[in-house]
Image (cartoon, rainbow, N blue to C red; front, side, top):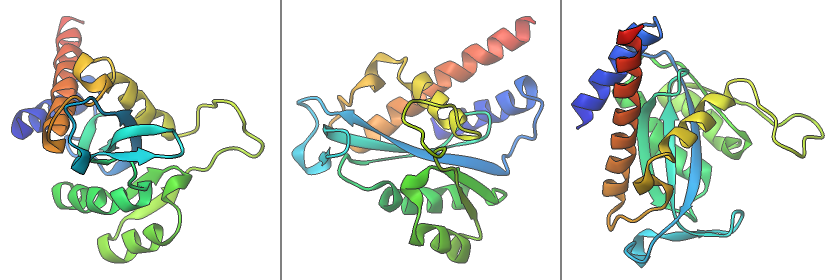
Length: 189
């Protein structure tokens, strides 16, 4: 499934977006989602900020919003703690990526760690001064749009899977559906 997903992403980048097959920049973010009764207690957590009991999906996407890496943790895991294994995976699979954009949940020692350990520039895109409502922020909208794409699939709106790896697979399947439809539309134009 990984090979199929990666091949489709390269095709979408080249054919539909007119870009190189491999990305040079990425965006990271996380999303907490409720866990169904089938989700084991050992793999779930509580996100006090969003008041959600379940899991959290950490994703890395390219600037087109196409999925590069996904990590599923308990909802109680802080963004910056989930970002370390996610950035390791991103660096291992895509060594050409040099810049990663993230929100203010990723500030602190993670920025220095990414620079020293992975040679990645982690740029924090902060909220605007005095912002209280939703505002589209430069670069951040691409990863938020990806979350909305993923949430269009019924199996990814909530976590129903017993194992975190199974939910990660459902996220990949959702993106495979999105990319095949996009390629089909591009072929007809």
